[in-house]
Image (cartoon, rainbow, N blue to C red; front, side, top):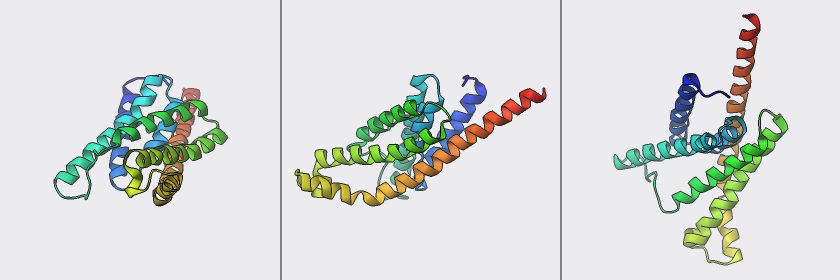
Length: 182
């Protein structure tokens, strides 16, 4: 993927749309991390895309919280862990490495699983996850507490992966068809 003004515009639009989607309850950041790792050749930019999207959505949440529109803000204790885990999810995208549909499916399943296990481990480790004891049983209780969030994360990641990778595939086909006609 060549980086030019059109690509920059698409990335900015993607960041804005993803940020708004997250505030509306549809979190595309894991799918963005897999997509960015798989498609963006400049690895630094691959890490930046989902992190910037996450940061802008956190800012939006924080603003809505400040004006009383949400019950919680975008920035909270432990948030840095989420950023690190999302950056780590980009590594799954590096493994996907392009438009290999079976690898995209595996990566889109692995991303929410990895996020679920790693982020909730740190919730449990750092603050005892809803007062859960720092025992193996407490860890399992903490994971159990997070199952509803996992379902949404899995559905969102699969849906947004289909949108991102499918949209990219269609855009590439359209560009190739136009070049052949010219």
